[in-house]
Image 1 (cartoon, rainbow, N blue to C red):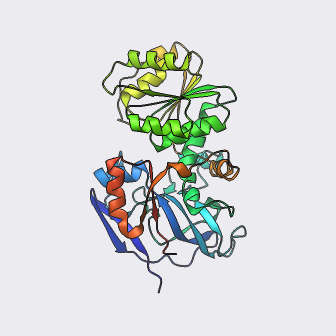
Image 2: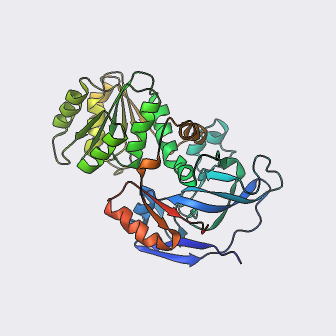
Length: 350
């Protein structure tokens, strides 16, 4: 008999493997998915360590995980584009479809969105889920389940480059060399950037970025002066960047982004940091630097899938550790240690 073993977070640092109820028959527009691979995201780790992210608090036991792929085992009566046995990537956010934001296509801003592993919604680090079929994307035969799970963080990078309007020949600064920063660097290159500089306080991450193809990697001092960081970046690039994609979320990193970007350029802020910061806004406003927020993504799974399927972007080197579902606690502790980049958990037994 099928079981639904799941990685359930009860409170901070209290992650347990438990049997959860099996999902019932999928609704007419849904599909039942046997989960295969799930990547650990920084938000998963934050919930694991703190039990909350901003206003989202784990008040009841919650299944973690939202970067996922799997196999269709059953489809609802009105689902036409999927069938049993199809391999799919799951976009984790399903909007209400009727609010003003949804109606104009900005469904990532929907106030009533269901999103895996965002309280009170359960995540996908479980054997089986029912999910909206139109948010399940069929994987080509040559794309692995792990690459399918990678579509979620890659969509964040794709959206950041779209919001930044990265174009052929742009010089781009990526601030922060975590998984999203590394993916943003790769995506900017795929979008046609002529030169990409990535910054980090971690020399190991910078070496990793160079191996992935970063032309310029700059180590900055976590406690250094922002003016010195700006000078470092401009000297390394030989100019001010046209576009900066901020992926660290730290106050001095956002300050660097606003001050280093050229007049008339664009800064897109992806990283999530403290609610209140001291930022040199006048220095950016006076130079017409456009500052744009990036919240998750919208309509980015198809282009992200095309980037991988076409071979223009290879995410496989970013996978540094692999675990099975029964090793979930060990996987999260490894993510906590920051020794790897992307950690994948294999949920399916076969």
